Image (cartoon, rainbow, N blue to C red):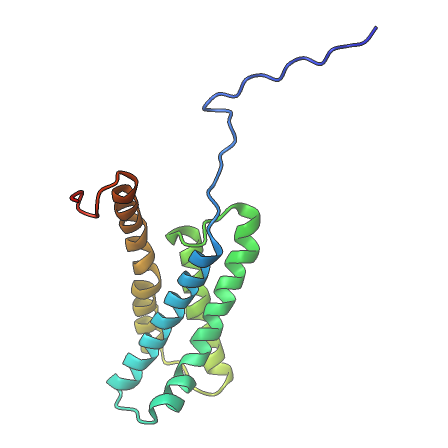
Length: 161
């Protein structure tokens, strides 16, 4: 006598697995480029506010620790977030990890390389990098939905065509 396997229970809205739309490689590269550009702007504005010369070499000297910290933050997001289903472009937790990696990694590398890291600079850089690295992520989601809904409906961004 052969046994027949029972039919699996039908999936309902509460039991269906949640599917996340994977972030495209193009979106990840674009996000990394935006983050890096904002770190460069942060370094350039800081140098300008202190009247420091040596435009390109000075910018590279100031920015490299924070760019390395940014890379470390992104690597953490990819390593930890991949297993946990993090959306790399979300503010929480991925954006916070990128911000923290940039801030902490940048200041630790500044200290290790003899550049120094005054307390007031840590506070200012924490605020500016948060506004830059988290701010664009906060704006990107609603803006993409707004633009995406216009395209899906066949209308322009304002719903007029």
